[in-house]
Every structure is written in structure tokens, then in C-alpha cells.
Amino acid sequence: MAKTSQRTPENFTAADGVTLRDYIEVQFAAMEKANDLAREVNTAQHESLNNFRQAMLDQAKNLLPRSEYEIYHHKVEEDIKALQKYQSTMEGKASQSSVNITLLISIVSLILAFVGIIEKIMVK
Image 1: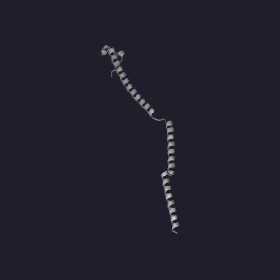
Image 2: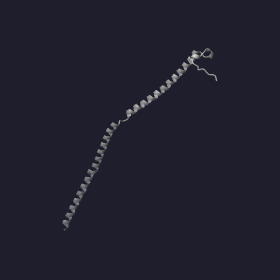
Image 3: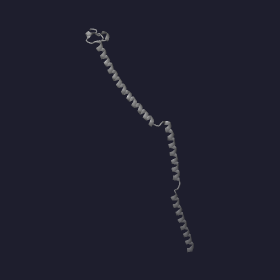
């Protein structure tokens, strides 16, 4: 097998059909193309990271830190306990209307009792 020579700028000759200038221009164009492609990939990656960073900033603005949550949660628990205590107190108390009805029934009963006693005394 014949040993193939590696094509480098030093071993190019006009006999090879490619001049050194053409070789360098082709290599330069390839590097520019690779550079442009890398720049596009880099730009897309930066846009993606910027979107992620913005999402994290939005999340940080909207979320409540644990310490602040615990303060508010403790206050809500205290309010709930106060409302439960108030409800228990109100359920234990008689309403004014029920007190008035009971008083009215008692008065009517007393009047009927007196009428009955007076009637028994008069009948004898």
C-alpha cells in the first residue's frame, strides 16, 4: 500500500491543483461557518437560560417564604380558635326570643293557677 501524505499547507503545491491561498480561504470559510453555528447555538442557550431565570424571578415574587407563612398561619389558627370559642358560647346562651316565650308561658300559667285557686275558693 502506498503511504498517503497528509495535506497540510506546507505540502500543497500548484501540481496538486489547489493553491495555498485557495486552501486557506476554504479553511477560513469553514471556520466562519463553524463560528456562526456556535454563535447561534450559544444565543439559543442564553435565551433559554434567560427564560428560566425570569421564571425563577417570577416564582420568587409570587411564593411566600416559610417564616412568613408560619406567622400568617399562626394568626389564622388563633382566629379560628376564637371563632370556635365564640360559637360554643353562643350555642350555650339562650336567645332573647326563647327567654321571652318562656316568660310569657310562665305568666300565663300563673294567671291560670290563680284563676283556678280563686274558682275553688268561690265554689265552696
